[in-house]
Amino acid sequence: QRQPAGTVELPLTRFIHFVHQPEFENPYGRSDLREAYRAYWAKANVWQWWVVFAERFAIPIAKGTHPKSQDSAKLDEFLTLLKQLQANTSLRLEEGWDVALIESGRDPKQFFESAINRFDLAICKALLLPDKLGLVGGTVEAGSYSLAQTQGDVFVLSLDLLRKRLQQGA
Image (cartoon, rainbow, N blue to C red; front, top):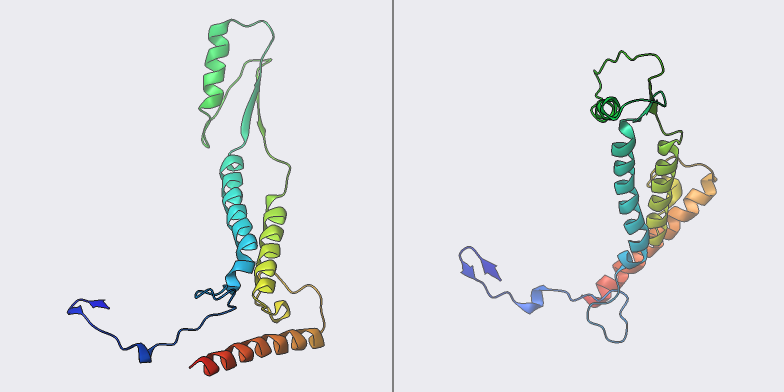
């Protein structure tokens, strides 16, 4: 091993080579995280889409209406005004001219939060974590105490089996 003082030889008897879920003599095994990757990937993308949605719809779209017969210079000036609207902009418009702000009617919080909570649940299930113990995002919606106890027992059992396999390999 390389260290600031130089290279140090480490004895192999101090290490355990543990292969989790070996397949076909693969020295690396198969990770438990592999089953959770799809939900992790989707959750990471939903977070990005939520940020894009928030950025895009934080400022409403400006829509302007004007009388039909107007010269192009006045229309260009009106379009420039619409493009440069800011939070503190005040307007005084002639009759027939109007500015409206269009906002999204969708509720992004409900959609994005439920999607992220769903992906959290999928990740926990892939890792065999009990969802009724409050380890998953969101609130525990349904389930009995006995279900939570059974899920906890299965989780402890899987950890126990992993511990025993590690002990046998040492």
